[in-house]
Image (tube, rainbow over all chains, first blue to last red; front, top):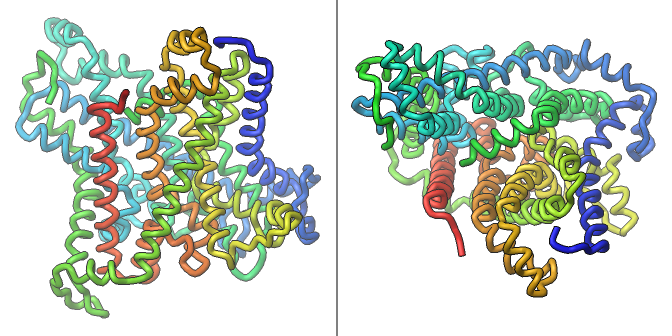
Length: 282
Length: 294
């Protein structure tokens, strides 16, 4: 702080408090809605204080879901989301580590071509090639399967670049020493490079777990079988009951459940999260 | 391109290492993209028996279609509004957090978690708040004499999706602005303070210009976000309506291709979108080469 200005400090806190309120309020409202009975929404206004039905609503959503809306129990969807997010994060990290290793520590024909092929994936998000990608997955018979939900999302240019950058900073002497001691390429990779990359891997895992968790369009396209629904897309089905007002209390209970895992990851792994976010964008 | 001074001599191993990544890339990225480009030049007869090569007809038709031009305009309005709203709020919050000495970690934690909320969930949260029958926002707006119904009023629908999309992006912008602010040398600030510059003057003449690399980077990222990552948000709030008022490009390409089954037009739209992403990525990477500075 350059100088002491009490009014400005007060204003600063005021700005921050208003900011926090704006950020938290929609979720607070959702939480409040999830603690009421379904009749409480008939009166025309959302209640602002918690109601007594919290355990009942959450219990019902976790174990039964709403069969009329075609939504399976949230516990199943949470399980699917967890599996998919972890598989995507681990898969992306694994294949990116290997390809970055190949690009940095070997010289071979078509190295540049390989690098650019990976680079191009940055420019082709699912949203811009929906139908042909769907056709490929359908032809391979991967609709309604975990493979179909995860494999097409696993290529990662950002993760490859991140590891490439990091590998370039690893001192040459380490590798020379390893070679003198008779270590082959895979031994060097496993026993020296991987342990050195630990922090980067953890930071990236946090970001990619969130990336996998919030996927919506892709699961929407490739799953029609409710056993494979992820929680993020399942909620949409709950909310989109065309003929009647949605059961707000139950919808909001699932919204809270769907938000909780990735939000907790961000809050409790904030340091890794920030590192991952800043690193992947460089 | 850079490698190590010493390298491993293996000839086949690097290909094996690259194989999984390249396989996924070729099968699920390059091939479908090539397919999209190919079918954007073709017309399929209604039964899917025959395809004819028709050069740029899909494109000329696309750009003479009022619905598509409308979608382009709406996307531009949406992207610019989200970028401006979200970035200015985040900058304000970042500057505030940067001034606070003791409690900045607590504030940061409270501000960053929306990053982890899925766009479709963000959509549902705001849709609930602005729900014309039971939402709290329309209730309060009615007190101010504004009749809120985004199911009917296109402008209100646009305002709703802009607010929701900006809300989610605040956390991201905030983190990058805080990082940018922390790299502004404190000595410059102190020197200016000694010369009698007040906090606002210091911000506009020293801090803000020095922040320009961050600002420019975020500008591109935010436009990218608004154009491509908001599909779920639109799908949960307005479905592109009412009357196409919020039918942004990514939503339209899905609606036309997947629901409307108009393959040729959808493929042409995909190609246009690809060109936009390529342009944005190119700008972003050029910027990394030489940073904007004064």
